[in-house]
Length: 107
Image (cartoon, rainbow, N blue to C red; front, side, top):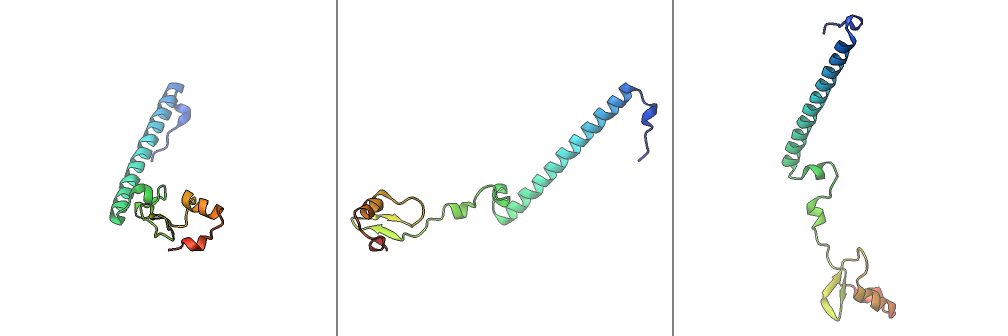
C-alpha cells in the first residue's frame, strides 16, 4: 500500500479520506459478519440444531421438550404425577401438610 502524505492534504481532503476509510471499515465489518453468520448457519444445519442452540443462547428443543418420568403419583387420581422437579403439585403439598410421607407417593 502506498503511503499518503497527510501533511499535504487540505482539511476537506482529510475529512473525505476519513469518511471513506470509515465507510470501507463498516462495509468490511458487515461482510465479515455475513460470512460468519453463513458459516454458523451451515454448521448448525450439519448438526441439526438452531444457530441459537449452537451458541448456547437457547436450550436444545430435544432437551426442553423431553418429558421426565413420573416419580410420584396421586393415589386418588393416578393421572396426576410429579417428576420430583420444580414446585410440588398442590395434591402432594396438601398430603405432606397432613403428615403423609413423600415415600408413600413414589411410583
